[in-house]
Image (tube, rainbow, N blue to C red; front, top):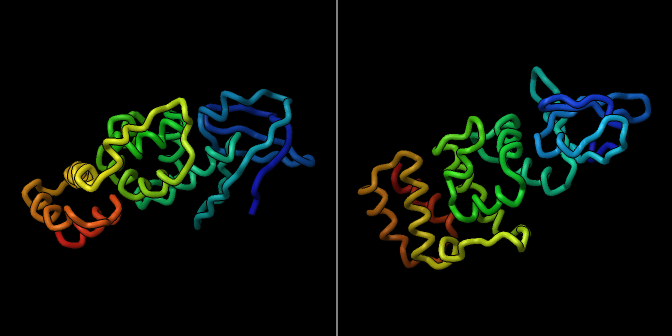
Length: 197
């Protein structure tokens, strides 16, 4: 597995670039936020992730470990592929993505091309507990009222389930039985999904 590549930038496109190392040019798919920091014939360190499919092997790369880490988180979501993850990273910076997830900010995530409300809800559902453990820029504020306390967890869970297409009366019935639990937001939503199937 290729962890990173250090080399000179030889080509810059809209969503990819070529970095040369030991006379080999690597085509790297990337976000706008990384690409705008690059300069032709200058040396950069690019953190990479290889994506292997039956019909394709692609390299994705970023100028920071943080951006690579968020890319890997996004692609771990069941409905998100590498192209969708790149779209999110091209529209929002790393800290804004983290804040959108912990604040249940669906509108911010849907600014990215190809990300609808249902997909944004899925991103929040699957990543919120992981992102809460990550560092976020101190200059940006997190709305604590939305991410702490059992009642607030229930409200966030209710909104996420509505966005996933479930009826409010069914949601309220299930969530009322989970109101006093010590479950995390992700666990509340997963348990609710089990009970509504």
